[in-house]
Length: 233
Image 1 (tube, rainbow, N blue to C red):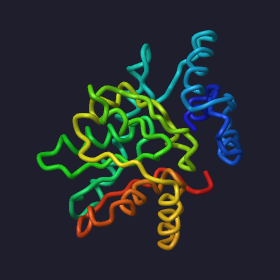
Image 2: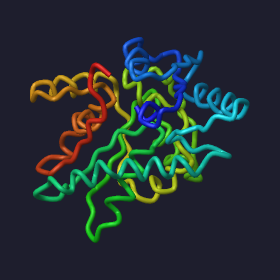
Image 3: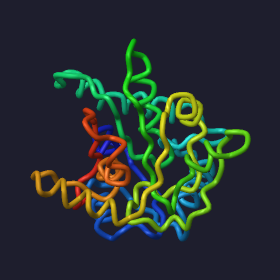
């Protein structure tokens, strides 16, 4: 964890729906975990309030009013994933499916691939229970909107009812297709990854779950998926 590398204290705010295994994994890295009663957005707000009170530095990929610069830098760091992919690939992808919570990773994919002369189709995949980006692009003015879902998906890392304000402009400009998927597809996708010896958690398998949702859409196309978590983390 970065806090340990920099020899500074780290306090991680998580919503109450976070699984005990994930909380314990964070604690093993030496961080203090603050469990907030409520949603991801409640945890973000509580972190903001306490950080202002105590003079702590917030580091998050969620951009909100009064906190916009660091999330941009975090998203720039996410592009490392695509640079590493570029070093290994043989042929460019036709489609990139990206799991979308608040949209930080998705915006990084847009900024990276749209900087090329030719770029793939970019697909956003989020849970039906937390589809803030689909709600936003479907709104009458195309501005950030709140998901009407219950934020209770098993794709815990994507349980967000509000998108990042720093990520949304790139997402609105550069994403070709927005998908909201059911949880059972993520479970199927995890099983498929496992069959190939790949350890994937629910959120990490969301891109593959997007293919399962629309198999005809992606037939005979070269697809890039990003597995962002293991099942045990």
